[in-house]
Amino acid sequence: MYLFTYQHIKKLRSNKNATLVKCMLYNIYINVDFYMQSITHYNNIQNILSKFVYLKENMSNKIKAVLFDMDGVLLDSMPYHEKAWCQLFRDEGVPFSREEAYLNEGRTGYNTIETIIVKATGNKPSRLKVEQLYERKKELMKQFPPVREIEGMPKVIEYLNEIGIKIGVVTGSSQDGVINKLKHFYNKIVIKESVITGLDVKNGKPHPEPYLKALSRVGVSAEETIVIENAPLGIESSVAANIETIAINTGPLDNSILYQFGAQDVCQSSEELLQVLKARLS
Image 1: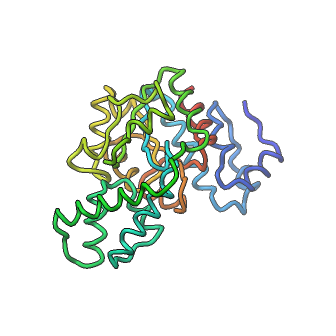
Image 2: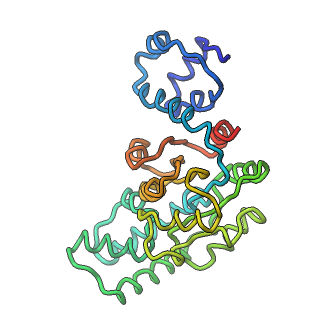
Image 3: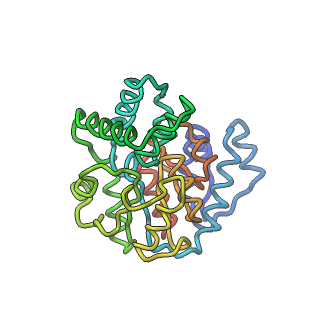
């Protein structure tokens, strides 16, 4: 039995991430009246209670695999992609904001270019134009320092590996060296055969094909899988594939956007994600 104390409630009120609540995955008895009165001014009470329902409903599911997005989840590369996309479209005279880089994250490079240009001009660019712009974008990416892993994420991967959970990666990237980057930071755990890139699919995110293909390649069902995503379109893709999805918010978007696209839970850091996974998989 987990007992609420004044200190717990005080901590909960000051922590909008509700980490405390996410980790209470035991047979918890809650005095709802006391709980509601204690945090009357906490404006996320509905989200907190929904987390309890989500966790309790899913505790009986036997999870065999966790599929990760790459950029912004395993690798701290999104700031580079954001700058490269903004520069590319600025050079083309096409309006494109920092937030749009994150809202469109998860698409294949070709689809991103086509989508943004059609939105700005009303005209679909030729395939040759799209290819030229994507090559330019890849060149822009080379100006940045070597990418690093998301802080704390190797511990998440190591934990899953230790308890026998299969690991896969689903990325919209088609850039050279994707596998080598993953192997550099997650060697012997993330393997080539379990990675789906933009080159492996006809329809990129938000279409469910990338995650459906990953399920097949890893050898698990949707009910046996959890997806870790940071991008709205990636969340939409995994939810369309009927996979339980946890978001990690490593960008500038508000948590509410990730929930709107279908995330069942949102974490603010890899440390918080680790605790949620430990509770979920125990």
